[in-house]
Length: 216
Image (tube, rainbow, N blue to C red; front, top):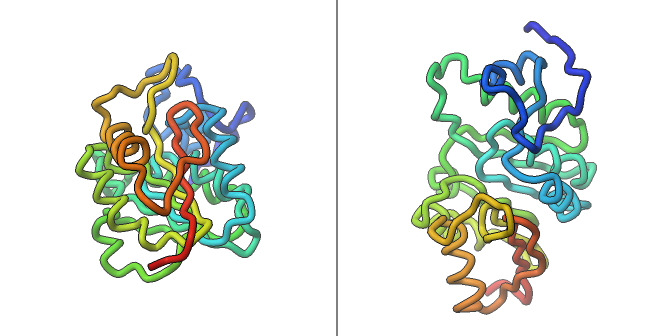
């Protein structure tokens, strides 16, 4: 594989790259940084909440920037499960988004990663492991995010957390009241205030909820 070292910041938060370099092939080749779909402040929050956690699941990986934040701070003997079908590539045999993500996340050696190239709804059918951090950032339709919550939150241990991305409005942000994650969070954690869960942090588009008490 051609590997041209990128000498600048390895992560890009501002989307300031020229249109000609946005294709993920340039990230895979090392000719540009991997592009985050979150802000620098959100990146820091992801790392902070991942600190010391040993069983982390991320739904929706893209180029792998959020996975980098999680892996850099997780437990040294922890496992990061990365779930993404990587189905949007125009040329599936090459799938440069997948290749860029593997390259970026592989640059961090802390803990271990397990890649699951499948839809989260398919993966959940055979899942049987406890989770202490769950990042939901996959299907952003209201139906999709509700399904991820319904199928995956039962595996989160007491004291564990779920992080929703693109789930709140903030000044200068990109989210709208009609976004699926925004509607879900407003419904479950602001209006219903479902028992056993509470919002513990909100930063930009991230909403972090924590599980308390004992599992039923």
